[in-house]
Amino acid sequence: MSETTGSAAARENATTKSGKSSKRRSATDVSLNMDELRELAALVDEYSFTDFEFENENIRVRLSRMTAAPVSYASVAATQPPQAAAAQSARTPEASKTSEAADEELYKITSPIVGTFYRSPGPDNDPYVTEGSKVTPESVVCIVEAMKLMNEIQAETSGEVVKIYVENGQPVEYGQPLFGVKK
Image (cartoon, rainbow, N blue to C red):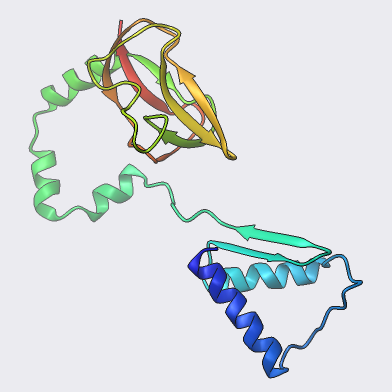
């Protein structure tokens, strides 16, 4: 049980003990109506819970929400200190053009699903591939977790991994480049 879920249980117990609970459900009630679900969702939002779970012998309700918002490059650039922005704009346009041209020549292994990117099969394991690794079409290069299912992603090409676009544990979108492979 997470800390926020425990806090909700403590509040519920305190409310029940103080007698201030406006609605009491009998053991024969087996469902919640939409108003009660909306009320629960509002409480989860109000107290910034990431997970809330309620269960008795008749019903189980679990509410959770994503906490990590995807970061756009525009917001990162806007939050950089002025010195970093000046240094970035001082780079030669030729260097960025050659970098983009080299990037375009790479075969991109993309995410086939929306999920969470993992470079290794477990937290204590080495990554499937690193920059400089040779891959074949059957080589597993990463895992994308979606709804608690671990989906192994294969390279689908032969070559050398020269660029890794995503950090371990980062959420990925469908079609988002994960690796750049030089054939």
